[in-house]
Each structure stands twice: as C-alpha cells, then as structure tokens.
Image 1: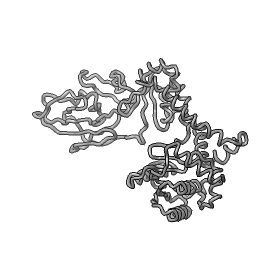
Image 2: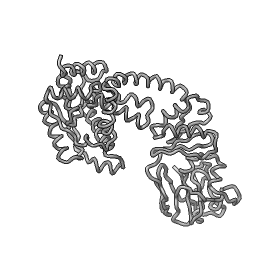
Image 3: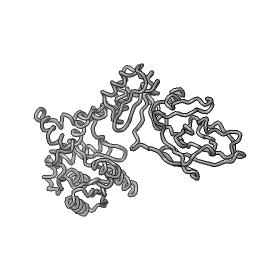
Image 4: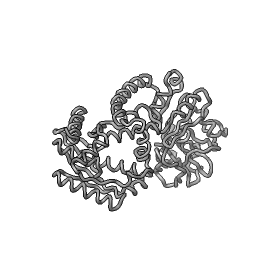
Amino acid sequence: MNKHKDLLQKFTDFNRLKHLASRKKQCLLTVSGGMDSMVMCHLFQQAGFPFAIAHCNFNLRGAESDADEDLVRTIAAKYKVEIFVKSFPTKEYATLKNISIQLAARELRYTWFEELRKDWKLDLIATAHHLNDNIETIIYNLIKGTGIRGLRGIPVRHEHIIRPMLFAAREEIEAYQKQHQLLYREDSSNAEDKYARNNIRHNLIPLMKEINPSLEKTLGDKIDLFSELEALYEKQNNKPVKGLFLERKDDIYIPILKLKKLKNASTILFEHLKDFGFNAEQIEDMLANLDNIPGKQFLTDKARIIKDRRFFILTQLAQKDFTAQLIQKDDTEIKLPGASLKLTTLNIEQLKITADKNTAFIDLSKLEFPLIVRHWQQGDYFYPFGMKMKKKKLKKFFTDQKIALNQKETIWVIESNQKIVWVAGHRMDERFKVMTNTVEILKVQLK
C-alpha cells in the first residue's frame, strides 16, 4: 500500500475510533490555504465525509492574504462545496481589546466558526492540527511551566471542535501533498523565529531529534497515556478540594486551616491557580506564609492573592482603576464600576428610616455640592455615627469591623468639602446625621 493510501486509511480509522468525522456528520473545515488544511480538505473529499469550508482573511499580509483567499475559493469550487469567507479588521480589534494579534485572530475566527455552525446547522468544526503541532504545544507548555494537563497537548475534541488529523506527522502530510500534487500557500510568518512556537519548531525540535530521530513516534505514543494519567490525577486531587476554593461574588477564598491539613497542598494549589498566572515558586511562598501576619500579596498580570487572617483571597485584576466621580445636587443615579448610587431628596414628613446598611439618610443642608464619590484612601478618617464625635481612621475602622483586605479596596466613600459623609455600605458620619430640626434629607442607596 502506497503512502497516500496509508494516510487516508489512518485518517478514516482515527476518526472512527475517536468518534469524530464520518459520512453522517456535516463538518465545517477551517481552511487557511496552507498545506495542512489543504490536505485535510482532500482527505475529507476522498473519505466521502460531507463538509463545507470556512476561510478567514485577517488582512495581515496584504496581497498574500488575498492570494490565500483566492486559492481556497478555487478549491471549494473544485470540490463543489459551500464556502464561507470573512474579512477581519484584526489589528484594530487587537488594539481595541489590548491583546496580541495572535490572540485577536483566534478570538475572531472561533467566534465566527461557531456562528456558522449554528446558523447552518452543522455538526462539527474541524481544524487541521497534526501530531507535530501537538508535540510543539507540549514542549511549549513544559517550557512555560505546566501542570499535568499541559502534557496532553491539544485535545482531540473540545465541544464541537475536532482535530481529525492529530494522529498525522508533518512528514506524512508532506508526502501526501506531493503524491497528490495538492496546491497550497506558504504563510511567510511561519519562517519567523520571533514567535515562540516557530522557535521551538525551527530550533529546539531539530536538536531533540538529533538525540531521538523517532521523536514524533515516541511522544505520539505517549499522548494518550498522558491524557489517561491526567484524568486519574484530577480525580485524585479533586477529593480533598471540596470546600477549599470558596466563591464569594467575584473572589475566591481559600481557607488557611484547610490548607494546613493537606499533604499535597502545593500540587492542588498549583493546578487550581496556574490559569491565573501563578507559578510553582509563588505557591511555595504562599505556603511558607501560612502562619505569618496578614497583608502579604502575590501578584500576576491576571490576578492578586492577599493573605488575610483566615483566608488567601484571590481577586482577578480589573483592566483599569477608577478614580472619582462628582455628584451634582440634581443627580438621581450615579453609575460606578460594579455598583451604582440611587439618590432621592425627601422632606422630613417622608422620612422612614430603615436599618439597611446600604442606605444612608443625610441632612441635605449640611452638604456642599458637588459631592465626590471615590474609593477610600490611606489617611482617610471620619466620625463614625454613634461614637459621640470620636475621630477614627478608616483603616482602623475596617480592622475593627473585620473587613477582608480585598474588600477594603472596593469600598466607596462619599465626600463633601473634604469631609467623609458616608462609608458606603458600612457607616454614616456623625456630622451629617438627620437631626430634629432637619428639613430636607438626601437618601442614598448603594446598589
């Protein structure tokens, strides 16, 4: 049996064993015009698997991008299949979202692929990832510092996305292309070593193959084993996890007492925190600080962990800080990040005081507009209601109230002429309370 029939037989066997593409499933093939995706098209056509083609023009390489599109349109016409083409403003999208070009292209294409799948009632989306892509991914994950999940590489299937060529080595694909004289386009950016994966492909893997010429087969044989090991590993590690990662609003609380009782605390923490950018060294530092005083922080570009008295508290970082906003006398609502203030003016006859800590009743005559709403700052002080005009720093007030460190930073204060009127959601200032001679009242509700 010649090489191209070998690959076709492997393709049909692999898809049957992994329950991927078949004659009964309509697939959307993601075709760039490169060798891998053009071979995938031919294999689908030869196997008799029904398919349509989707091509993205990211407008990143000028005339090259347009030539890629022309070739894919030609192939779709040759195979007499439906083709969908979309042009994306990739650079503009990356700038708007403040992400890399590569990530922008990924977000754009996968969002569009899923829209096509749903709109046209297709069963699956197929990408042309192959064995060498998988090996490069595993090596990249190891270099960056992966848990066991990274050893499995690219999954054969994720929801509706399948990789029907993940079994095939690059050499097999090249041989198949030559045998059938399949047209394809070479992306010039593939030759540039500035991308980490290209660097691995062009420099690191050739060195590894000098040591083991059968590198693809050796690692390819192990990938299924790595996936099985991952499943066993996660099953084992999830046993003691119950009650260890507590979700409270947008934060995650990790009880320090529970961590102390775990024999494999570092492994469990790493597996659950690595997606937030935390590395093994930071995890060990956290565990070394279990009995230290509160306040220690651990930072990545995605999140922050603060050590509190009883918990490590994980907070995902906001994209930008909020400073301050003015409140005019006639305002009825102020929108804030993650909250809002509703403002109502009442006369004394309308007053019905409630014990709701998120509502403040303020003597309107004592306010000087515009007011300022902002996050509290170091050095802030006020005269807490009910404490007979005793001055207190907010930092001390928060400590006395046992407010967690991460929650302190989200607390809003309303200020009038450099005087704090209300620590929103916590306590009014004595100087602005409603008196027996009060005529008008500003009711403020924190939502």
